[in-house]
Image (cartoon, rainbow, N blue to C red):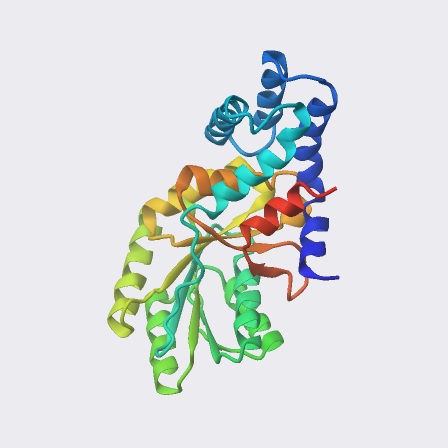
Length: 304
């Protein structure tokens, strides 16, 4: 099964929640009137795209009707697919990693969102491209996080730099970058703690990591990826806001899209926070985390 088919299958619950609600409204009307628009608005509001995105889409729909791009209810389906794709591709950017020096990806997110698994799959993705990848276990708050990363390192054939539980996360990052430079690694992926309940400590910890890695490698971190769990819906949006305050997030990795009806949050994250979604996870498999393609996503969301 190709990735598009896996994406389509993974989005089945979201499609039922989001697209099928819209389909039901479309089938219930022969013509476009205010009642039809009210029902479309309600269908959008009860999906996980959020209030701001719903307002934006309704404005676009009314403009589309005025411009004769939407002449009958059936025209709404391709119009929405195009608009959602446009929202997601606006100011989109791929991963910005240096070609001639070691690249550094800092991975942030609360515990339980699949952060360590995402790091393992990222490592696998880049190793498969022929890059020499080093993982850094800088979530020293939990022994389990260090163990998990070690297991992933063994699975994908990547070395892991670690210290003991409770040690200084910035020291782990420092050692990892020293090792990467000395032994010609292409990429370092750094895990971090996700203690949102103690925002002050988390902010200080991340600032220190930023300072240390910025001194060791020019421009580092080149990417700060925020991992969000799609199953949490609008809560993911709140987490993104908080991490936006404590770190310089450059992109989002949205996991567990295959297990949720709340995949519409992907549109809300991009539209409301202006942070591009760069990776999506649609399954347990090693290859089920892939660079995000907005057009492909919109196509899969509206596929029959």
